[in-house]
Length: 184
Image (tube, rainbow, N blue to C red; front, top):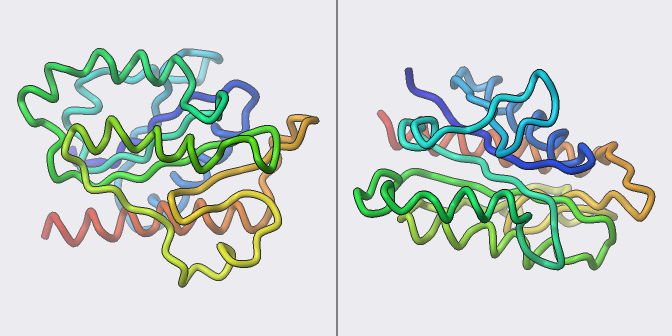
């Protein structure tokens, strides 16, 4: 089965909400999805395996912002993928990244960049958010050219803004479209 892996860690629910929006967009293109997390937090969560990663056609990868970096759970996962790296299992697969922080200047962009690093080391093709997405220029909260983002505010509001949802959808659509083009 060919699929796009949507892989995330979520502490308060924002990143999980983003993952579901990205999945909805991918699903609307007819592509299959595997939604996985690093740490089981509820009965419905499925924990990622290295097999899930190895066999995906593309990857959307999300983590909350922790002092401008990915969460330790995500970093630990990538630190254990050396065998995949040695065999080049992820080379030329498209990927995108997404994050959430509790404040407007809480490090979303630097987190998106740190999320990108293991993907680039694995030889993946990183896709950002192009400026033809109007919400990227009009958002009052999350959204960057590096990837989708959400700003929850200090109240940890997990509800995504309409602009954040549109940007998540654009990430999912673009990832699916590029994946389909590469696999023709």
